[in-house]
Image 1 (tube, rainbow, N blue to C red):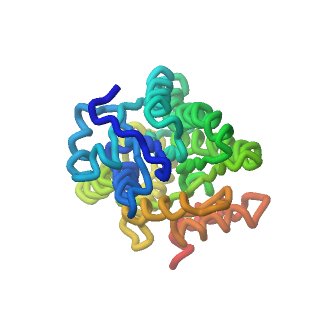
Image 2 (image 1 turned 45 degrees about the vertical axis):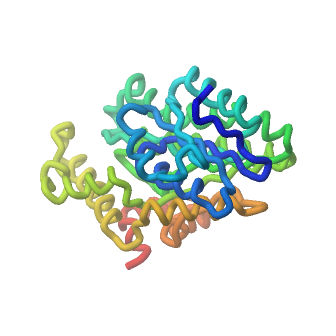
Image 3 (image 1 turned 90 degrees about the vertical axis):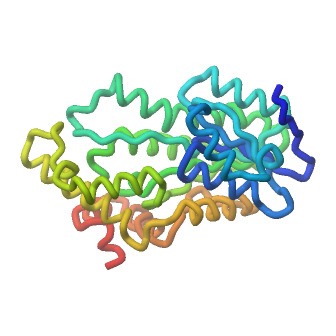
Amino acid sequence: MYSEFKMASSSQKVVLITGTATGIGFTTAVKFAGAPGKKYKVYATMRNMNEKKGDLEKAAGKLLNDTLFIRELDVSDEASRVKCVQAILEEDKRIDILINNAVVSHMGVFEELKLEEDGLKNFQINYFGPFRLMQLVVPGMKKRKSGRILNLSSIGSLLPCPFTDLYIHPKLALEGASESAAAYLRPFNVWVSVVHLGAVKTPRAEQVVAAYGQYKDAFLKPDFIKDEEVQKLYAKQMTTMMDLFTHDTCQTTDEVAQFLLDTAEVKKPVLYYQSSEFARKVAEQKYVDPTGEKAIKLYEAGVLSLVK
């Protein structure tokens, strides 16, 4: 099917990673592919091959078409999902590890969100896509009695995060699906985990922080918010987010990629992981209080109050 076809050896783990055009997925693909002993054969997937493929090819260097193979995948499109998974199964007969990383974000005011437009797009990429990919890889994993699924989420799912509803809601849905799948699949030695990430210094995040520094007023008072009280709440949320991306708790993509690699190699993994000590502190506020009030108070105080 592909000129660079090279079947994985019996000792290699076949890894499918979504959203590898940039950021966390990009670095994670190279990290897994570069693991000692050629332990992993990585399928790094992306939607826009024409614009983004070259960057990953350059970063991969000698790993390209040896332990790292770039494939097209639009996680929001069913035909693309099926085609990608089937092609890998035809080449290597298995997928050992699935890392659902691809994501799209969105900012908006709760009562003005357009569910049939932005809502559908966000759920397609952040929930339905990852869910269907799990469904597509699970039959083979169950049959072999071996498999690993990592679904990336955010600390935004652990505490109130107004104005990011259409990013967080699908993440919460994916966490629910992960919980159900984890319990169902463990008897088959298939392990599903959710990884809560804090702020990460991706290229996109760095661009936003730079623009915020240059156009702060425009960021804090966007034209799409007319209500003065709502605008104040939005400014507070944006200030907190920008503070997170400039704080020393913000992780690099390499740190996250290494965490994912280490987590993938755990023999009997748990359901929930946090990629940093800071993210773990946020999770503790969520899970020790069944009323949810600690999470709301943490939002009101600012999440960085945990480390001040």
